[in-house]
Amino acid sequence: PSFCKFWAGRCINVHPSLLPKHAGGMDLEVHQAVLDAKEGETGCTIHEVTDQVDGGPIVLQKKVAVSKDDTAESLKAKVQPLEGAAFVEAIQSYIKGKVISYADAGVSIDAGNDLVEMIKPFCKATRRAGCDADLGGFGGLFDLAAAGYDAKETVLIGATDGVGTKLRIAQTTKNHSTVGIDLVAMCVNDLIVAGGEPLFFLDYFATGHLEVEEAAEVVKGIAEGCRQAGCGLIGGETAEMPSMYAPGDYDLAGFSVGAVPKDRILPQGIGAGDVLLGLTSSGIHSNGFSLVRKLIEKEGLSYGSPCPWDSSIETIGDSLLTPTKIYVKACLPLIKKGIVKGMAHITGGGLLENLPRTLPKGIGAEIVDHPSLPSVFAWMKNVSGLDDNEMLRTFNCGIGMILVVDKANAAEAKKMLLEGGEEQVYEMGTLVNGSGVKMMNSLS
Picture 1 (cartoon, rainbow, N blue to C red):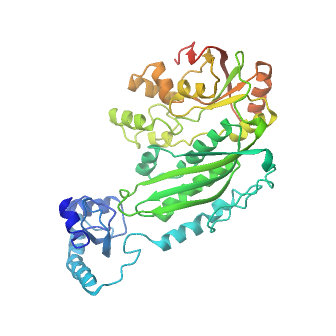
Picture 2 (cartoon, rainbow, N blue to C red):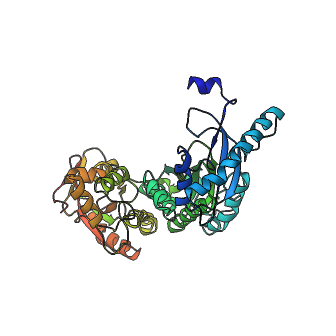
Picture 3 (tube, rainbow, N blue to C red):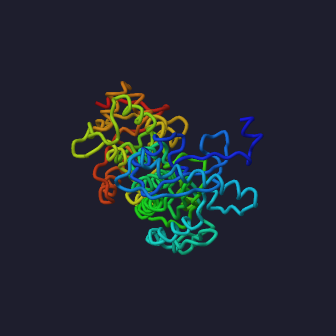
């Protein structure tokens, strides 16, 4: 670090690839990585030396085409002659004070503009009352009155979340089509727990090098999630930050705003005797993936391996990337009718940690009919050795949302949920005087 600090901006190095791709490797290893990635071009990069290997600011790059007959050795023979010339050109640019552009530093304004143009139709498809979902301004606009809300009697609700290490599976399998739905789901499912109708959504996409097609696939998924939730995708931010992320990596964050009339904010009126209705999850959703990934590794499997818990799904990756279920359209009619007293979104911490968050002091829950574990959770339980309690603190275990309703309204609530698209509604138990959650049946 002291060497790099002393020579900062004055020491350069050559790397035999187009950084940030294939950073950290050397010689034939790098050229073979280019071939394995089936890239159409390669070359060399002159970059400033920092304490991050191959992570310093890019000075310039020289490119050469990759042919289908190339080997690691033939690529080396193509690239190596470029290195000397690149060094000379780089040194001359320092001597002459050559202007170095933003693109030279690894940030492409043109790629950013291309992405915006590509995603405009996706965003436009999320138009709803209150917004037109046009991109290009400095901020997204939303008209509460046009959406049917009286500002004086309305409370806004905000929620933000990410997708976590589920992104690593998308990046490894190069399937980016569903994580955008996950991003929206994690936010809007939290909004409805407070009784809110999701109005609009904004996203943040950060990467070291912007791959336009890849980013567009992610945003297309975000737009689909917004469509399912009935909210407008009115803006976002794409941040290209060379050296901040490893090649192929990106991160996502989502931000959603909803509205609720002041007299309909949840939870309210919850008490002993109320009934707990459980709505099924679509799978693991977007929590617990650090453990999931560790278990896959422990079993010697990969995301391309045949799915061991569901033979109808081709690979483990396909199963794990099943998007998080969005509960808005099924639950919102019940909320607006006033027959829901409270809700719990079963995310990190599972049922045991999330259900108590919606209950008042002195009220606990008795679960007498938790459904058996779906196959993916049964497999995770078996290979992890976790007991029921730890499973319920780690995963959703097949129940992604719980509604609290008055016993007298339970039948109507179930009927409305089924009419709203839910395939199954479980009457899981009741609220009692006390605290915490007591499981009265096993998960097997």
